[in-house]
Length: 138
Image (cartoon, rainbow, N blue to C red; front, side, top):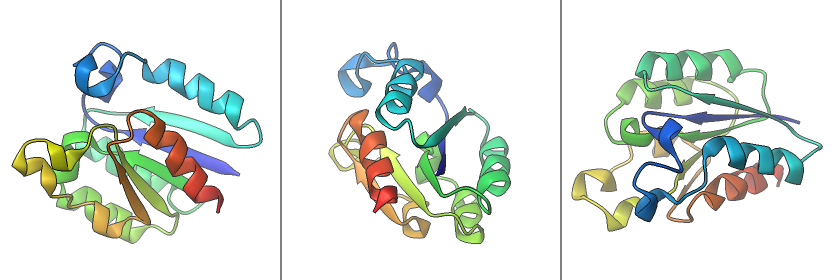
């Protein structure tokens, strides 16, 4: 099984960015942990602060991988283009949000990308990535 985790803007700062919201664990450390928990799965990680690069990655892996875990960050609420890219590919996508987007600012309550995903996980902290992987294994 081959999975791609894609993180959007500012998520490269996990572990140092607003730890009261996003926790103290770096994404690099967490990806290592996931690879240990799931040695049978080839897990690849990609992060970009650039919308078009996220779209390119979705296109690149969206026809050959078994699953995609996507945290589009702020683009979740603004990017019709990423939503369209998800709709255009065959690989199932699970959307993840570390914080509960419905407990935050009102503009974060709308996910343009979620309707094109297999499911959406929000508010489970960094463990949401693991829950997304588990959902793809079913």
